[in-house]
Image: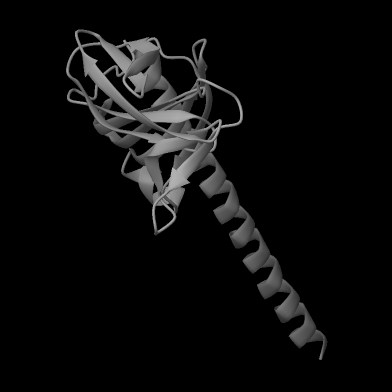
Length: 187
């Protein structure tokens, strides 16, 4: 009986050490991927306020030296309440794709986004009982966002940026930007 207890205790101890090592390896792999993303952003002189690497298991991504998807929050400029980059498939210091979401404050407080039949956000919001349509343009090195055709927000951009969509959400009016050259998106 003693031998059985000793054997079971030994097996459980080895399993516990193995599971602990696996958790530590996963933690270290995530830290490695975060450092890889920070290096990429550092070459672009982008200072993130927060970043979150996705793509579990991190161990496999770290072994391939590839961060699949990273959400990078950047300090928003005045008139904005959110500035976020989505960096996809970062490997060897290059990203396959970089998308940027910038959210401008509503022109007036108390705005409510208008959702479509499926509950998705649209390019409209209700402000003071009136439906307002939002749009935007990206060209000549700047993004400009409009409310019913009147400009209410802008942001300097580098060249080769495409405005994908403008939509109203709970936080404000968001613009989705796609970078043709995913190196140094904010530079």
